[in-house]
Image 1 (cartoon, rainbow, N blue to C red):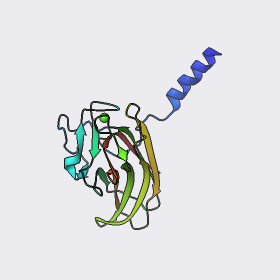
Image 2: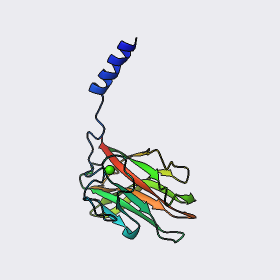
Image 3: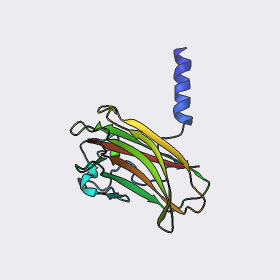
Length: 184
Ligand SMILES: [Ca+2]
């Protein structure tokens, strides 16, 4: 029996999809640039960039992740995003990443992280799909995969895949690593 299970496990390993295969997002593990703490990951943008950027404090794979927090103001937020310029209306986009609560600056109160997709036409936002949220209960020791799925609206010609932190009635921050976006 042990032997059969072993064979089945090998078959799954050989035949299953490789993690990251088909990913349309570059620099998905935030390994570039190296050694530029607080800077934007290569190929990515951010806003309120004093409160997010590359870090070696935590990583799921490689040496780096992105740290996301926000300034001390109730309604502030910050985040990082990748702009994808080959959106096809009607196609489905499955967007995920792994998140880890910050041990130095944990999420408190009503603060939360969230994935979203901003749909664009001629560089202007035409629609936004809000996705999964995570708050103070997210682990500081085990990376958690968060995922959202959306269908590109008619007219969209690009989109931003956004990983965001809303301070709201709390504080803190988290790390994100290993983004995956599949176009189906
Ligand atoms: Ca990484």
